[in-house]
Length: 106
Image 1 (tube, one colour):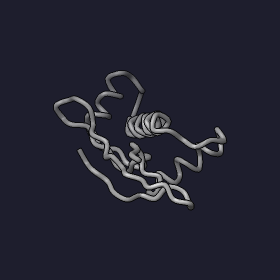
Image 2 (tube, rainbow, N blue to C red):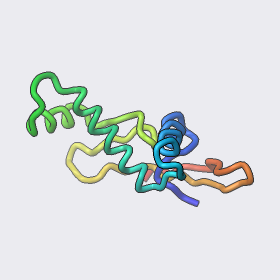
Image 3 (cartoon, rainbow, N blue to C red):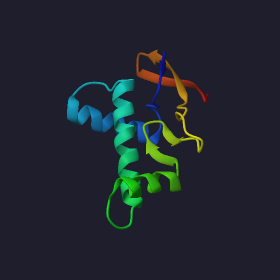
């Protein structure tokens, strides 16, 4: 099985814990994307000194395109634009739940 978030990492565990607390079901890859977007937005906003505007938001993002504490750990966006590449985590389902068996960074 493959997933776009790492349920065994420190922040992946926290994401899963919070998701279960609020929604009483296991998170999906799509919910991990939403969670990560919220964390990224919060980190961008925390970097802004002064009024929050489109310009200050963009400047904050461009000043540091790497974000941590995400469901996958750390994610960086390329300077020339485009999509960030998320690692793919390989999981094995066991009687004790999912176990991480590998990871591939595109």
